[in-house]
Length: 569
Image (cartoon, rainbow, N blue to C red; front, side):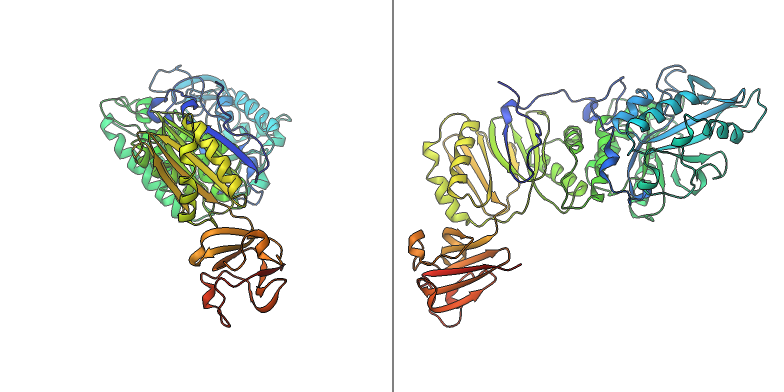
């Protein structure tokens, strides 16, 4: 059987998506949560993520994944000096946008060092890769700290003069921004923004103007948690700090007793790395802005958890970029526990990353199938530990079918459903949609065992959950369309009829003299009359009524025979 698509480009408000829990692609978890990466490749790709954000967005408001000692991606100087596993282009393609470039001034040129160790890379190599990337992705921006490193040798000019020489080269000049203030994205798209750690701000944003945490000494493995506490405190400060201030937070640390890869990734025996602490904190919705995070050996999930914070900057009415699908899959590796725990984890993350939307969240263990109608975004994780995580958006969470009436209808269908969980979900979805076509539906079917340990989902109230035999059925309605809804009983109960135009004789649609309540969605003015063709006593309404017996001039309950509608804009 073929694997179902994860996300297909379809009309925003007409997207049906089949999800089969037993068919979800299973991939091995990497480094316990994808917070750490020590290989030459990475499970994420975001070469154009900045393009989604308005030009007016301040660089200070953007959460930027960055790398400490960016070019130390080989083991040239041993484990004490290696801080990355990806070369520069691979970092940029993965979504890294802040670089830490350490230049030794030698022979009136810059070589790239980590302390005394030459990294077999020169500043020209850095600029060639960076400008080539910006040429291919002109809506992106790179932030580059330039710092003097090691001793100067065989020079005839100052460090700043040599930097100016590089800056004025025709190949690089168009790409290097000349300002020193905190810019908007519109000012610096396709540009390198220099964080000037050598010239006092004459060549970019002054390093001294940044709010910085860079306590890099971690004496032993048992001091990693102390380093994390400093990172966390700076995250808290960033979250509540001035929106116009650039905050920079180094997660890196090292010493002869704790190499960079250990500080970042942990060292077994219960010793967690800073990256591990950080991804839990970010996915756990503890902050809304992370600033610039300079990391050693960042994994796909950690990069993506930082990037996800930026979706808060988009209007709640917008469809989120497709990049969120990659992010969702990667951060899901951080989740653990039973279905209920995973549901809470997804809910906290997605509502923090993209608030103001109607998110439906599910965590499901194998043995399930579902049909879901979504409007906007549909996100699905890999299968891990038997669980799949889902999140999708709908236009509203409004349902016009009462819980009791829906339960009665669904209960009448169950005995005739056949096949697997997926088969039953498809059959029931088609029937519910045909019976109540005026709103959207999701149907999830779980084969035993059920319970919160095996499945958990968002329930907005107007939902049916019924069990027959080994199968439990969850049916959820939402995104009711505009119209005037008539109910046969008070409090919006019983049979329901949607109208979008007047009806001279309700008997022709099976609703003569049985109206007891009504709801109105959208800009409608309704006229309810006791006789056909809007004759006899009438009353007007622009909003719903839970019991028309309370309308003055009655009795009205079970006496309405015609309805007139006008749409008012």
